[in-house]
Image (cartoon, rainbow, N blue to C red):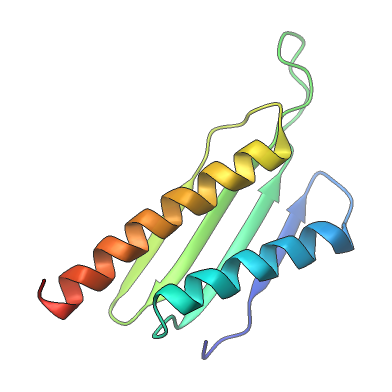
Length: 104
């Protein structure tokens, strides 16, 4: 990546373990498409909902040559589930972009 990875925690404390997990997942995306220009991941915990309780939202922004790919997951109660769903969606979209850019 040309630009350093940006990881932002909004409305929740910084976690070294979570940051390491995000870095590992971004590294896997880089293996999938090595022309990744930059990436930004935002982990957000919106204000408490009386019905749903504490929820977590994940947003991934991938800068690609000539394009930006953005994945946003709706707030859910399970942080790991939200992370997995967001990164699986990013992987699927990045794989499709790579195939289209190769002309397949």
